Structures are given as structure tokens and as C-alpha cells.
Length: 260
Image 1 (cartoon, rainbow, N blue to C red):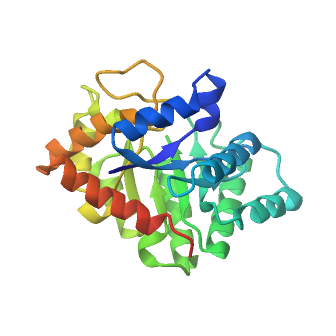
Image 2: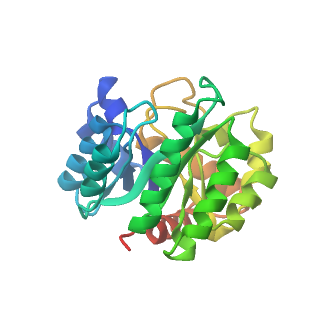
């Protein structure tokens, strides 16, 4: 009974994936709950369609994309969409300086707008951070001070790749931390060390499909069925059975990704 907290079904479909077949394979692998992630108009609306097609199994998240032009009108449209009961989170959103310039103010302002919307609606936020840890911590600290929702449901740091110190700072703000197939890679020992420090009640799992397929499927297109090797890796790391880890990570996902 595993929960995949981050799937880009729009990109899977764009890559030629048969989504119903992928979902059948996920069920056979024990992946019973999935969060369909947004971030573009196409992704947002496909997440809604899938949540309606698979009630009780798929929930949806939505956000404005980092490259999407935005203004008060587009923010209102997003807010109207997020009021639909299928949506349980805002995301993904965040900062990525791998390709973008740090002195470009637009991504930061847009991320702030998404955080303000999350605080106003009481919805958890799915945060993307790449080469932006200091900036992310600054903005999430402000968000935590403005957050009026449940302290244990402020959001998720998705696809965590940082060290144990960064993990502890996020945990102190109330965030859950989600691990992807990267944790299974042979050169990810420091990430596994960080994963071992995350308390049971803050740990989450994700595939980030179609990206980041775990070992031994690394380099192939990813899908939710491949959550199981990630869970098995983390269970071994933490001295837990697969069943124990599946139970508490799914309970964590259900706690954070609920309508408030």
C-alpha cells in the first residue's frame, strides 16, 4: 500500500506512455495512491481529469509554471481551479538555478505568489529546489511564519537531494521530505545518510515519473510502478520492513495531502 507523491502524467503522456496501462502496473506493484502534479495549464487540467477518472486513488495538485506568464487574472484562474475538491496541494513550484540566472527576479516573485496562495487557501505546497537551497530556506521561513493551517501539513520538499543539515532545517519549518529514485543510485551515499535522519512521521516517497527511474532501471522512462524499489531501498536503510515503511509513508501522505 504505497503512495507516490509526485507524478508528471502530462510528461508521461507526451513521451508516449499508455497511462491506463501504467496505472494497472502501479496497482500490481502495490502503489495504491498517487498525486498527479501540475505546474502548467496542460498538467493542471490533466491532473484534474485523472483525479476524476480515478477517484479515491489519484489526487491532484496545480500551480503556475516557472516559465508561464502570470498576472492577477491567471492567479484568480488558478485559485478557482484549486477550489475544486480534487486538488489537495499547490505545486510543483520553487526555484531552479541550474539553468536560470539568480539575478532574474521573476521566478522568485512567482514562487512567492504561489506560497501566498498556499497560505491563503490552507493548502500544502510541493517545493522544487535545485541549486537554490539558501533562497528556498529564506522564502519557506517566511511562509512558515504566515502559515495558518495544520503545523504538520505545510508542505513537501519534493525530490530531496540535499544533506542532513538542510533536511533538519526543512523539518524545523514543518515540511515533510520526499525521496525519489536518486536515493538508490550508487553515487548517492550522502543522500542516503540524509534520508536516515528524517523521522518516520516526515518521510515520503515519489517517483517523479517520467524522470529519475531507480536502480536497476536507471536511464529508462520512469512510472509509478517503480516506486517499490525506492521504498525497498529506504526500508533497508532504516531497518524497517517494506510493510512498515509503506504504512507510515502512506499515513504521512494522507495527513499532508488532505483538504483543510
